[in-house]
Length: 347
Picture 1 (cartoon, rainbow, N blue to C red):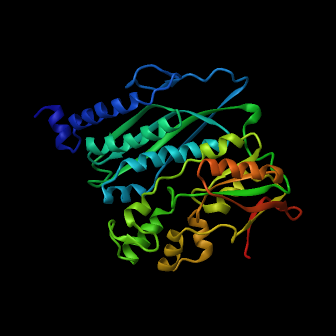
Picture 2 (picture 1 turned 90 degrees about the vertical axis):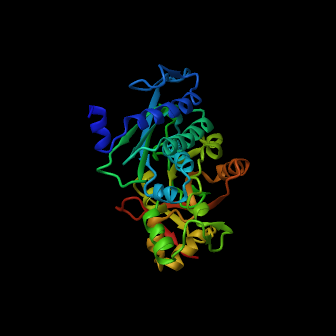
Picture 3 (picture 1 turned 45 degrees about the horizontal axis):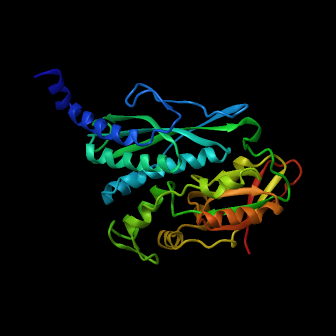
């Protein structure tokens, strides 16, 4: 038995990995922008910082799509989670006003299937092309002792750039600022552990069953692609005081991250419609309203904080990008001596 045979007997197929890398290389090549440098397949990916910046600051983020990959595996649809990964990451650096430059992905599985890896990366590449961003590299790993057959994990890292003087970090937020909520396209990439238990264990639905009140299947609803807000927000970044990407922790858990001391964000809980998905999950899962707010985005995937006079232009920009947006609250002074807080106001 050769060394390669021994590795295969242990559960790792090098020939499969080579085939996956060959397919992925073709997809990566199609994302290269004029800023890309080096060769596809190198040990590291290289991109130039664009010209014209006086004090460029690199903005970096890394994340995954969580247990949404289990839904993808059940549906046999793997490209959408790749696009999810990119859009989620773009939103995370958009919060700081950054333009994406490069992306890296990581796929880990028990036994790598070349066709599935190709589908995943096709979604990643599609997301990169949509944002004029280079897929600079990535990694595939086979770990049969760690992952069950048919399961995989997906993560990625993004690098963007912003002018230091225009970077957003929440220090511009003042009393009187308005909160604009931008519509999500469903769960995005958070809350899937609870959602799966409700849908598959409690409601006893399968991936192809109709999802109540939506006119779509379970798979279509749960695999809806995480929306990117770049097109809706880039035209108005110069007037925005802060942005909050609503991910794990819900509206309150993410909005508080961009508030300076001494203010309170008051969210009007009735100012936007809950999509049917969340009403179904709440009712079928018997989940309390407070827990729903902590776990899910409830239909709001991004929040912009800006002056009252700039609200109309921001809403118009969202409309042009076909993203519904609502005024969902405002910034008020906090009680003396208290840290920044978020409060829901029931009306």
